[in-house]
Length: 79
Image 1 (cartoon, rainbow, N blue to C red):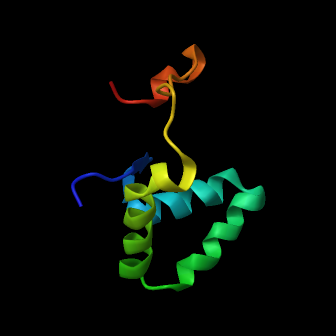
Image 2 (image 1 turned 60 degrees about the vertical axis):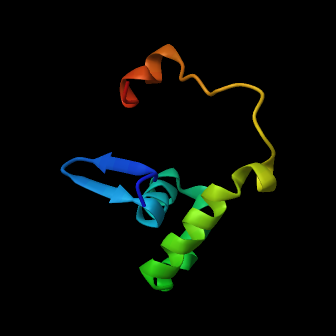
């Protein structure tokens, strides 16, 4: 898919569901519960990721404004 989340970590990059799993692992806590889906085939978890991404406004509602990172976190985002 051309539109996806991309996580760059050290010298590796992760796309779609693999990026979500890596982020959940790094966040820890309750977010680690997402890792239970890692037992499923990647094709299925990617399909689930794209389904949620495509329907995110239906699932969570539209946003009133765009997210802007705080100054100390701006260097972690691409321009």
